[in-house]
Image: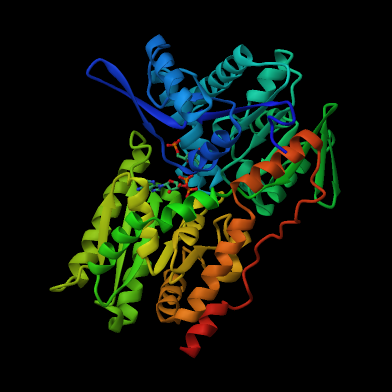
Length: 504
Ligand code: ADP
Ligand code: F6P
């Protein structure tokens, strides 16, 4: 089933368009944006066509020339791009302020990083209303409107107020926090009520769904009715029914697998491996974000090298970091901390012919990134908390020769689908991560191949098109009954790979 064949045009709405605009030499230039949301949704719209409404990534007043540049870009991508413009103040208070200094840290359980300020709320609400007006200006009766992520929690409420009757759906890419953390959010009742103006709310994994249901139950004890039947959960609130579900997002498997198999990528991967003779390559690929656990990962590496000195000179961490949100103070500070820590570790362990941490701080083009995935022996994906984490899935699919091992945080959504074939770790516990690195280093070729093949099969079965079909099926036909029940990840009583380590 596609939105086209079901007679609906797909309208995706997210804070960012999949392109970032910049101006130089009197003209607008567009480049592809990074981040999980764009990676997941771009192939969906390429496949189905439709419309993408969002911010073009630069503070500017409404600009006809930029609008036309986006129209031209839309002709190439096969779907239309419609901008919502934000000025400097809106960027500061809506995007940096309420979205990224309140909702982002809070939804990742890091309340001590929140910077609560009431002006941010007013602007957040106003920008959500602007997005709703931007949607209304484009809306056709048969449209299926699908809004994405924490920047736009209130869009449906504004559209309903303006009389929209279309089916409206929402997907949250980040985690939904537990009740005692959610309670710290200013306007917590209003935001929850506004979310319930959507017809379908999609979360990444069972953990987020559980948290959301608990918040509704506690904050709207007398007003909300919650019905659960198998996979189907329906909340009735102020005479409206909202269906909720967990839909783990994924990647375009075929595209990543084919890209990694290309001869050019194989050549590059070989070249990378040749730079590290006699060593296993540990790889990290993260946005510069305090939720990604970067300092914690480096401390775990230090722990590994101290505890097992025989591994010195026999492994190297290649840490690739893509710059992100650098106008926010916490991000600029994180960058400094990271640089200092890398300097300390390299200062302590480097010797002739071996540097323990290679650090790249930039956006990589696709074949370069695939070559690193293909070359790496051990991938370290250790966020403190993450909605899904697509890097983990990209690595598994692009590890063409199946020689790699994935070390994955227990707090990344991806663990609930992949835990059987990875080393699941607690990223706060440097000893635990170091033990996983040590065990992964010693894992034999056959075990590696078996695990990697199973990871690839699982991601191929549940790729991004499976995700979008499941979501649309639920949104347009209320069909969740065929959808597999997603079990919540529970850590094993004693870590399975510690036992495995004892055997090596
Ligand atoms: P988030 O959505 O928080 O950024 P994800 O892991 O879900 O986290 O997605 C990150 C996306 O950004 C992935 O598609 C990954 O390939 C891409 N990415 C990360 N680092 C880089 C980089 N240095 N160059 C290019 N793309 C990158
Ligand atoms: O998944 C979380 C998210 O906010 C996405 O919406 C976005 O793709 C990514 O992180 C990058 O963040 P930003 O749009 O703030 O650069």
